Amino acid sequence: MFDKSSDNLQIPSFLRLVTAVECSVVFFATVLLFFLPDFTKGLWAWTIPPFNARFVGAVYFAAYLPLILFWLTARWTPGRLVLWMIFVFTTLIMAVMLWHWDVFEWNRPATFLVFWPLYLFLPFNSAFFLFQSRAIERVNTSATPASWRITLLSFALFGGIYGLGLLVAPGSFTNFWPWEVDEFHARIYASAFATPAVGAWILSRRGAASEYMAFGLNLLAGGFLPILGTLWTNSGVPVERQVNYDTGTWAFFIIFLMTGILGIGQILLAVRKGN
Image (cartoon, rainbow, N blue to C red; front, top):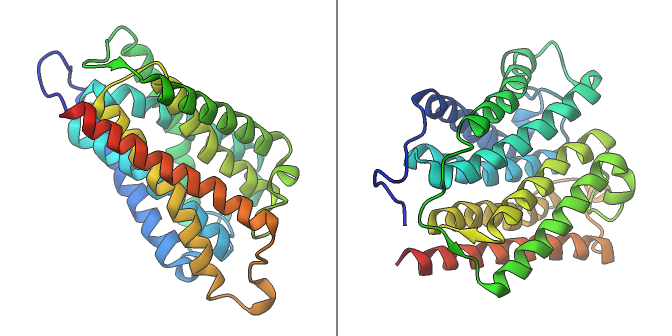
């Protein structure tokens, strides 16, 4: 599944070092936000309520899985796919940070020592290496099955439109969510939809087994963990802040459930193509 032949070129050592730093930071953030939201709220770069904390933690874990795969394989396949996803994710977050710079807690080290330096650097770093590797061919790719092509294009269309909607009309696009989402968090969440949309679009025509695996792991965590995080948080907040299980909440659950199921499908496709 993971081609280590000379045809699949290794990524530059500097890019692998940067990826290792990303993996460490993202893993640490995932653990804090998803498992220790009450402890994290006094450390995080901005004020983050518990529902938001676990959702962001789920998004980070979804990002971590293809990242660690990228670091471990250190090859351009699946590296270019993951790097495109890094570029979209970090660029969108950088744009939202600059838009909402006033929400940050500037007296906290996480703000000026970690969050801002990282998200001002990573978009340009990924753009540079994407440009540098533009002539490198993905290896061991084959045509994506027709049924999957339609599914991935549909997913890309939905994720792209919804991600754009979160950016331009955050209130309207989150008014059915189980908890109240402010404009800043809604715009941050745009990255959680636009990033896999780009991955789906890239894989809709051709893909390698390792690329399907990286993408499938992203969708698996990004689909099921937001549901788990919502239910877990709901069990620990006061009654007046608990989720109302109305039509909007079930729509939220269905969106992420379908994402997780799509992730399982991509993993199975990766295993089938890798054998």
